[in-house]
Image 1: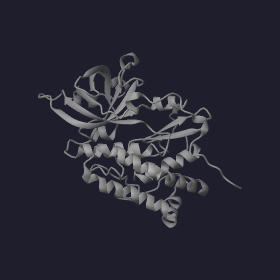
Image 2: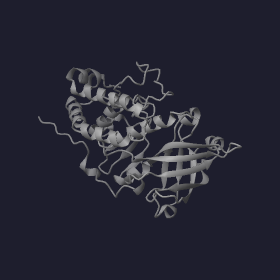
Image 3: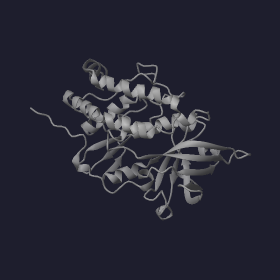
Image 4: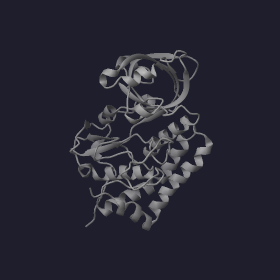
Length: 334
């Protein structure tokens, strides 16, 4: 019997294009002002505050956009100096701006107020970009230069940061004619098998253990029109690839360093694992090209270690013994 797999189901043809802010490579400069303390203290959908986002896309002229924003995230809200935020905007306000096509955006900021904090943020951005040639079910992202001012500080202290803009879950669902679902009773083995394994491999690729398809932690599930379930993965700052100083491994796992890879995907047919293995090997050239184009903003001293970590992953895929021991035989049964 010949088993045939498809990397991506043909029923999920894209609906519409990518918003301009994600399709254009031109650097975008942003300015924001808000009280860090007040923003952190407000939670839930009622925590939005009106604000003005200033943006500059080439040249010296700054334009403005009326938005509202709130803090988001759990770990970073409690542990980080800079809190990630979610931005809302009205479609008519965003029209004819770089933000056209977006109603909401997630903004990821560096965690710590340290001289190398931007480098860790850029590393996280790179993890999103490396995933693009591997899976069409990815979140679009953009790296921006952000001038952020804390209005809660008497002296209104300002910071020059790198930040990541990430498209909202609803936009990616719209693109694939799908719907987002929150069903904690949905077992990972009910998700689209090929896509799930491709995404599980990626978590292993970047050394990420801060996720769970079972509990839908840092995984959003999208249901397509053919009733298949697609996992959408995000939030990679705790990965070994980023290797942030605040990263930690859960106590229940048999590893003590995020740099140590651990395969945490569920077991599937061996032929499927081999198909996904071949898929990654086929995409290796594109992965390296994505790395070269997305790592231009980072401190050159970080390049060597990142390249080494990528190479180590592909060394595992190219070695039959290591592939079987570290990935296929390491899969979860429960």
